[in-house]
Picture (cartoon, rainbow, N blue to C red):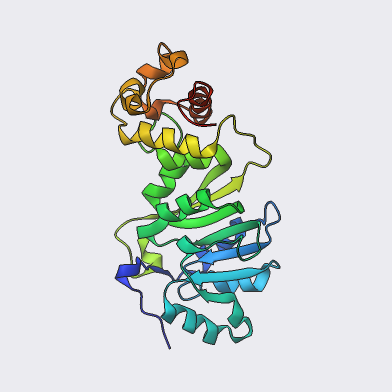
Length: 262
């Protein structure tokens, strides 16, 4: 039995064992997660290394039933670890886990959604190691002042330290994608206390970058401009020019004047 890569699921199966090992070696178990979840195991190229060398509780989640059946046959001693479930609908807290880690070769078509789901989880995600489209990986890791810097950059960097590890060519996949891939690692900033509610930071950052060509004075006008910010130099900048900490401070100023609920 083999697994056919499905275009509608954005599947590009990694076939290079060396790169699989390099990805797995990036994972440290930082923050002592109670479980490691692999997203989109496909044919199990990453999975086999995770099963062999990592001592923590492990689950591999995929929406592709063909893949899950293949993995259960290929790794008969670990059948209970392969679950037919959409990570985007997964609630680790309901499964009894308050701290988890995530690894995987993320499907290109839902990689951003995966990160937004991680941000929305009530369970703490202590570490993420993943491969995704190079442009998305660069966007997540980029800093202010670059054209790649955006919503995910700010929100993820508010909670995580992020390292762009290495680039992967198309030839190591079946089928080869039309773009390069990038591998990144995220580590939770333990003990960080935000000066604002994270949900409010999300609202403000999304509003700012949805009109990224405009100054913040114009981009944030629909939310109202707090009096303390009316003459602030930030208002004459564009969203991509503000650092993560400046966005956090700005959100706190919105909250202080009642523009966003504390």
